[in-house]
Length: 326
Image 1 (cartoon, rainbow, N blue to C red):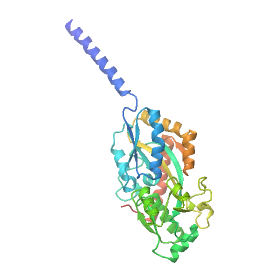
Image 2: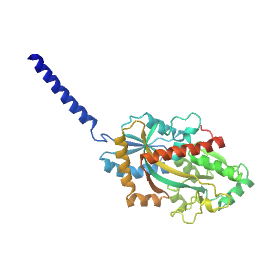
Image 3: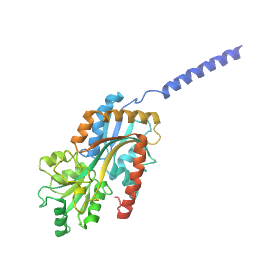
Image 4: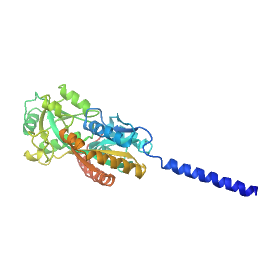
């Protein structure tokens, strides 16, 4: 009799523990602050993309969503930090395409863009704008190339790091034109723009969001938009597709959200669905367009396939151009 009573009590305890365990496993996400780790310094498009999504995502999730800037290493510092984070959806990476699919091809890469992350959603797609300091005696891209050839070793350009998309764009210009323009790497777009505004750098190439105010104020001169899609925010700036000799200069950037590999599928889908809803709002789309970008959503499967294709395509160019990292 005592044995049966003890057995019943044991079974009852097991049932209670099972229910408690199930309740714990199904506890609603998120349970704490969500951190968006931006791979660049404040002032660049990566930072802007993170901040555009942070506030509305916080409202959708019911928990604070903050942005933490971790620049350096051509995106590797931020990527490595998120790679090591607990795969629970509370630490996410907001990554720039040049870092996500070019940096891993460089020497001593700290992460694998396919194996180390669970794709969540793409946020923005944007062409780059080629800008120079306004006192340079050129007004068009062909004039810039002619000036560089007439003054060898005089011009330089800033990038957000060795192996970044800006670095690759500079290499593309060199291969297309033969113009030698010195490369000066920085730890993010923000610091690079600060030196361009200060007259310490001659030019750079980056997405429009951090440039528009400076261009309109006359503090920078825009020469071209890379690719074949003009920007409504810069209607008088030609695309490289329309400039003779630069038709093949197509360097488009994208900015996406990733979680650490192993993050539960339900969490990834929750995040992706909420981000997708935000991106469909007129407010988000208008803000993106006003900044020279396009709100192009990709779900986890689409972003995963896209990341893999971009990784393979840019890898071929990096190898052919013999580009290395720091």
